[in-house]
Image 1 (cartoon, rainbow, N blue to C red):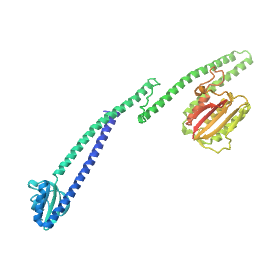
Image 2 (tube, one colour; image 1 turned 120 degrees about the vertical axis):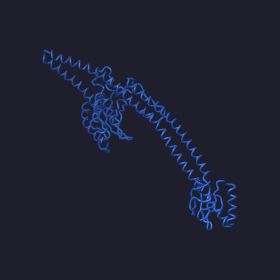
Image 3 (cartoon, rainbow, N blue to C red; image 1 turned 30 degrees about the vertical axis):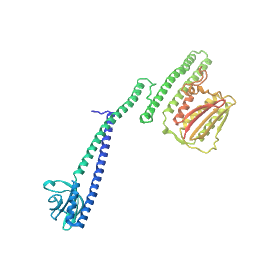
Image 4 (cartoon, helix red, strand yellow; image 1 turned 180 degrees about the vertical axis):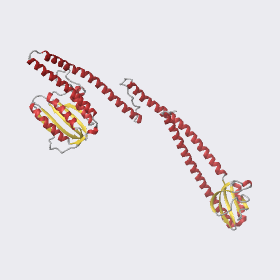
Length: 447
């Protein structure tokens, strides 16, 4: 029979409670037993010293009187003078000891083998008394009764602890079941298609709340990806429909053109439209690639050297477009080392510079900079173009999130999505800000 996890937790709670109670009961029993034995040993030693002192001062008659006086107040008293064979000469005790007398400071012994003293145990001390022996101590009857009372109390405590353990196990089972049912309900709802369902927390910070936060974060991510997938699907259908329609029209025009010039013009347009579609597909593949790459592929490199390489590549392009290309810090800045993906980070910075080249005002400038601030590397590309209003920046970062609603400008709205994907790969983020005028785009990478 398979036992559920909640039943196992309940049984574990009961078992732990029982083991703990038994351990405590055993410890208490052993401690009280040792204390009682020690108290009996001290009392026996004092009593024996007192009888020995009486014997030394008054002899056998005085000792007999002292034993008689002591017996009147103490039913458990054992005080007997025996000869070398163990036969009683006087006092309170068996007629003959069940053992041969010999000097002992303290021992637990059975006093007699026959008669009313047969089988009775006592804590006794034995001392020489002239040619005889003084056997003095107390019967264990009272001590045993006390021990039995303690044992009954401990047994009741163990039973009570067992009952409380069962109750605690039931409460624990109910609590765990309720929390797990809450998580399972949210997961089942999401599996059934309700992506808005979340687990939620109980307002604490226990393990269940931490698990709920992680599951909710995962569901947020899935919901976001599903929304992006819907947008991507719609955008791909929308953005590819026009170029493919133009491809068909230009191919038809090239096939039916009667003049060589018309055919060449149609074929040139056909190639241009094909290049546009291929660029869109290439960027989509780059985004998928950046999201498939793991952080294990990051290598240690000098980000300043990377900035210098990109500046060498794009400065002539910017100058050709009539823009001033500024790099900060200069290549002479102190070398840094950071775990980065050279190809994807270079592609992301190239995307930002391409955007600036398209949108920066003629005669303006493009600034490429690198800063190391508070454990972060900040790769920044700033221009003096039209910028992006704060309300539109989230839209600009989404895939196919074009701000040109008429889609009259070239581009597919994938460049910033790729940059953000690369930033996430590095555990960082993409920040968009105002350059007053213009746009400041910063890839922030923790180091």
